[in-house]
Image (cartoon, rainbow over all chains, first blue to last red; front, side, top):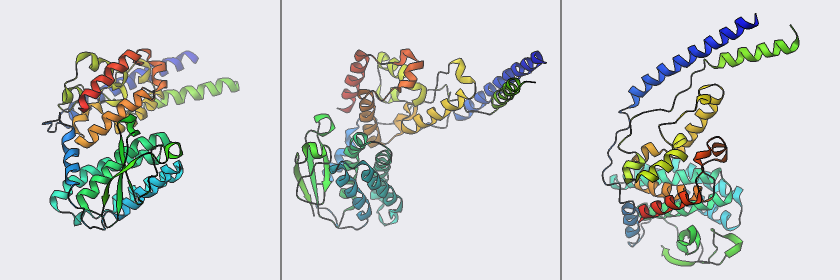
Length: 204
Length: 148
């Protein structure tokens, strides 16, 4: 009795192993050409973000399209100032909702492509902010701030905002953040270095 | 049959049964044009470090040890790979937008610096996946060059 059970068990193991291999071979063939996309000029990573920075020099357009995104961002920013990781996650969630409700139909064709790229990146950062502890939230907040800043440069805002800069964030390479008030309250270090930073630019 | 034997038989049947549950193997043998190494022209020593320490979960080609072909290990691994590739897939790195490539490069360095990656559970099984201080320096220097 016992022996036959073992024999059946092993036979089944081999059978299933064979089946897997076959499937694998099939899916290999199917997937080979699936992902071949264009890859020209992948070496210049800085190009696009620098372009976005340049357009910042023009006066910001008035637009209400970005209001919900910025509202979520500011809740997130203030939560990081107050070292409140839970509230920061809420801000991240608000931003995700704002991105999915964003009225893309109101963008011009050229805006649209750029918006899609920035929003894709921003959403990824917001997702990480929703599910991680504060150190990691701050890491993603560096890039998210840049993304939101670029969206404002691209689409505009009705709000008056300040673009602040902390030279010590991002491993001393520096990082920006946006604030609704003139006073410096640093979201990257919170109470440790609340007043570290300076205003780089006023938006509206 | 004693209770022990019954339980054993039951577990055996379950174990054999789950071997039939299909899992997707993460193995595409072709290297795509948008592969991380091709995108940035990575030197061989850097390629080896990434392949050894990252590619099992962050690429389209996992190097499966024998025990990973057996359930339920197979499922666990499939889940890890799915999550890993969602965050970062080196095989398709060149397909990300420039903006995302840049932030991913930064995150790669951050994760290694903080010893978050490679996962400690992964290193526990794959001793050779652990990055030495020297390996890390090589990777950082190469990544810093890319960002310039």
